[in-house]
Image 1 (cartoon, rainbow, N blue to C red):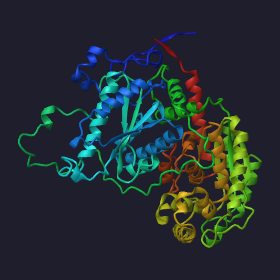
Image 2: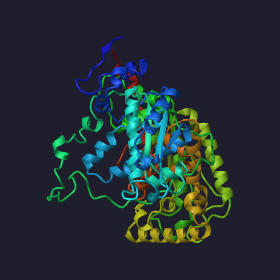
Image 3: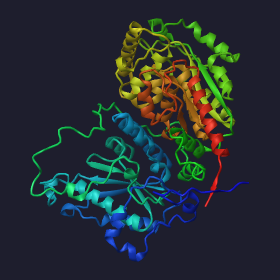
Image 4: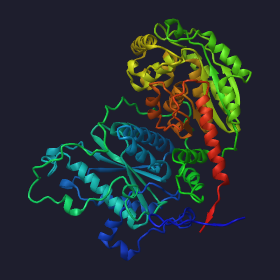
Length: 588
């Protein structure tokens, strides 16, 4: 077997995953060097990659002690350190951060957006510990010396505590990364913070899997350190001010309504991969004879898939769920409802577009018809299903997903005339979207048909909100019964079962993504198993993907349904998995 030397970069981190694994504490300063405060300050870095090795309790105590020794205005000591180790909390926090990362990226120019999305931001999943610095702002400001004049001085004190922890961690060879890609209210809700207690973000703490000599964003070409003289202002602020923000920023758009994922209700046992699995998945590409991350989003997706479990090359199944929708009586589709059964039969026979695409990708194909046994409503006038129907369809989907989970990737597809109206209605209910901005063309709709779709969704939302109130947005299964389709609920059950078995689930268009959204609302850890195969032309699809914190592999403006986009993405993903297995490995 040919032995290839490991290419050692001339700049940046020259260590390897093998070396870091053998000595996770090798970045530590000597005791003499740790005493040199300015050396430590100059060496502080924001760490984004972590080893899975645990942090000894005594060392964690030292880091927290450093934070507790921070200066605080009026000796108020407003900081509170929340130590997070539970998998469910980490899964939910990672979902919130992934979601906000995509929202922030969408506010940038295309080049800056790509640079942001290329950054490694998986510390919440990789680091063995999460430390959330919370500020107890409930004591009256007037009673704290110095805060009556500077009302945010308590927040500054907590920032000093975070900086102390950062320096103490660096001196001990630990890495710390500060994640603020959250909406503060979402993170506060996740951690049950009472009113008057605010969070300063999430600190990822663990042994670093990188040893950067320079700040990461500077090395990535994001920005450069300003000369000291540029930030020193004599006497007062200069009269001349810049007339516009930096050119790389676009005008920020108004953020959409956001809802914190509910705690797992269907399966309290469901959890995403632990940090050891996440790091192991990423490590599998660190000793290849190529530049790390050379496949971009595809490399990141391969890492996510391998963190779940090894996938047999070429193995997997496309599940195409079909259903009828009474909402078609309102003229929301350009095709008759009979087309649903025809495409389903073609899928059963293996000659539909979805089945043919699955076969070319080396995937099996299973077609299933999802039906509600109770009264099926048209959304605008009555509920789509009964709660008993939802439970039965979930159970059926769970059984199907469990049976197919051992065969590799699970790809989701659907067929159902009228189901883009149903999926858009669910997206509006769960995400607070405006129906006029959420409806898309579906299968060859025209402008008048889109207006009818928006009208139907508006009436359906008004009816359902009057009947269920806030529960419509907070409980996925209430929303599914009121507005959803049978195939969406069945695919949500498939997704939950596959995620529980740690099997990657490749999504197709809006309908399958809404099914995944229901599953994630029930159990946030499901998100770790999801792969966004594509971004379709349905207008609500991007909002749903953002809520899921997923970046799609493909953007081909598909509107075919049937799982075609999921199969194309799966084929590309399986190719990348095989390539990683067969690419030359390097040695030290």
